[in-house]
Length: 421
Length: 117
Image (cartoon, rainbow over all chains, first blue to last red; front, side, top):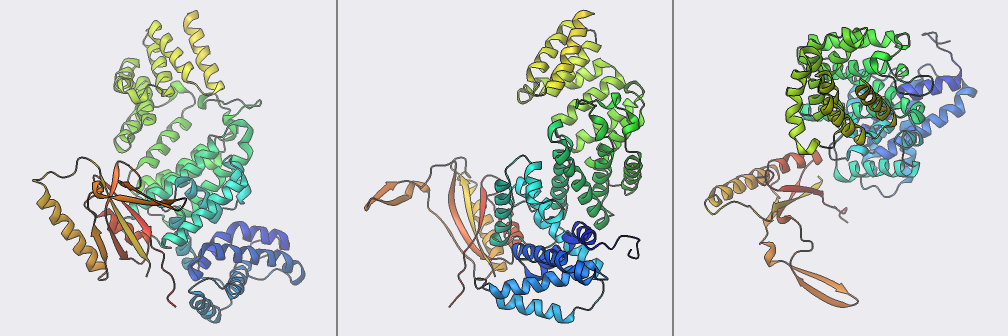
């Protein structure tokens, strides 16, 4: 056992160090040698060496530091064998200098954190395509292999490997800098980073039943990234708000699917299956974010989710507060998803007529003619307003637009009830 | 230091009117001066209209010359700069200040620099 009571089994230690420290080691090495691919290969070599030698020589006192040093030595070896790099000599000299001043002991955690931030911002650089950003972020900062990332995004391993290689080639070729952006672009770039993390989360969260297992990994990876960002940028309210939002959603991940794999709506879920630890942590983080007094989209979404979790049934939800939060959200972010949810909440808070009034402008918008949730919400509000014929027509339109069998069955049941009344 | 080419693309229609031209020229002069301040070795030119472009190809050993640009698109190459920048973010920052960006676009391409012998 080590000081923290963790087992000293070499394979288990190597695996833990791989999971917890690979990104940090990689981030430091990329800065030192200025090359993503070389750094990645060297870190891979170092872990292979750990697995080969630790069972024989024993686990080093500081496994993370051992990996960092070993990876730097492997990078030096690889650089010596390379002939093509123009600045090979400079890089070798720099690595040799670092090697000579290295003292035994912990690498400075602050410096590793700075490098991790550089790595995140570089992986999420807007000059890379969105799919490349998500893939590269998962590959460089997460613990998933290229094959696992490929399965999670439903593409072949070859395709995913090429996507990641192309991203690394563009970073090197186009000169995407390895640094935290300057203040003038930092807010924009941070928004982009958070969007990538939330996209990874949603990719996992919205997974269909069949691929739930592997894509659940994406939720865990996104939360890990969210935790890292919240630790590195604790004073940014939206960073903390995004982590809170992901935890509050993720707490219900298991309960959203019943025994035969069917989707279960929030108020029909078995609350015993909610992860109360995650909910408590999410709520605590949301409070911390709100105290920073910089409201934003992720905090508002987390607050709405918290109100839903707090209500034992749809009827007992504080719809006035939910509607007010959606109203604020709609002022920050223009999106039909938010506008429709706003109208639904107002429909519960102030009556179906008030909800229908808000939907009016959306129904006139030709671009939303094929937007299924709009027609489903419209149908529900018309039904509650007592306009049976108009409601039936809206249900038919919504059923026509449904791509998802579960959703379609639910709407058909409501239409059936309406006709039977 | 890495070199970047800023390719200035303008819309094929709806450019500045005759009355707007002096102000437009002033904007570009100011912009060029700001780039030159960042890189004294700045290179750049405005190109004549694509109506005056000619495209050359050699097909089966035969030189084919055709009137017009390589590809007919809504946005046409109107000029370029070649500027030294420490990294892509600096180049993107320069590109974002180009007077064209509200009605055209700027493509940023790293220039291949061969190591000098």
